Amino acid sequence: MMNDMSRNGMRSRRALALFPFLLILMLVASSGAAFHPGAWYAALIKPAWTPPNAVFPVAWTLLYLLIAISGWRAWLRCSGPIRRRAFTVYGLQLLLNLAWSWLFFGRHWVLMGLIDMLLLLVMIMLNIVRFRAIDIWAARLLWPYMLWVLYAVTLNAGILWLN
Image 1 (cartoon, helix red, strand yellow):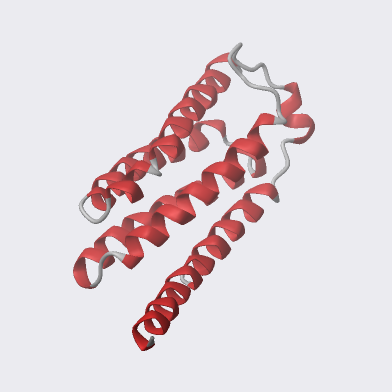
Image 2: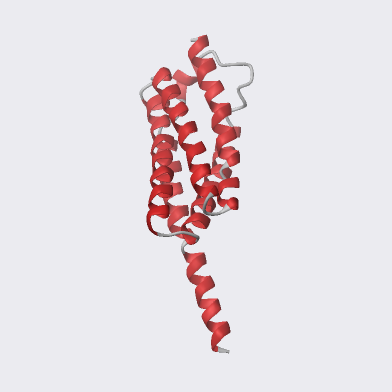
């Protein structure tokens, strides 16, 4: 009986550990949402493969949820120097993600946004490698994020080229 109670308590603590990841990703998402596309973005010539504006919040909501779950899974499965190295990369890719909205929408620096996004793509790939050594599903959950950012790189580069 005590063994079942102990297991249930452990499951509850593990589940509660997801909340800081969700909170961090909500903060990243909300700060990105602070910079609205506005008239400047509407006036830009965009590549033919640009999706409707309504696609972006839906895609990013799902991606941020996957990023949070990925981080949570990795956090539960490692400690010490392995955790520190993996989460240094995780944190850096979140900072680069955060910076893009400010660079692109806030400052209208399309080239700097592209550079940021290329660095972000590299950090996501490194994050996948680091998480794969910890938990295969933590790594796999980052694949949609990497593919979306790769697509976003083409959009950003297309906007730079066309304008």
